Image 1 (spheres, helix red, strand yellow):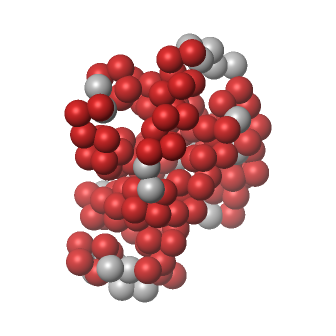
Image 2: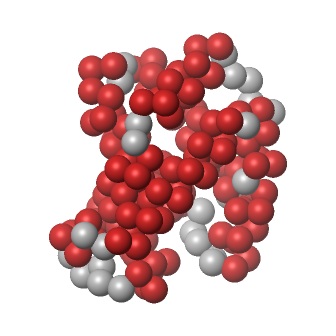
Length: 147
């Protein structure tokens, strides 16, 4: 079980209250697919992912980015049971989709970059540390089925 400080809890709640899920999700997933092109193999059904412009303009990338952020919102609302919250998703990604769990970390890094750009100067080192811890717990929970 993860121990959360009051600051970490408040910070995660604050971040999720300030960001637009649709925009952040789209930008983060698009960034991940562009920077780490091997992650595209899991999105073959999304159609044209041939270059950065195609990825950014792809409506299915935007929609899935929103889905990711809505999933993160569930974790933010259930910080004391993130592993339980993601148990079914872990099974889905492991047993049906066969997603390499390292890709969860790559997407988490992309989310961090986009959130930093949205929050600007208020994205302090302490805020980054809280978000990093939160996303690391999410990544661990999604990878639980692999262990």
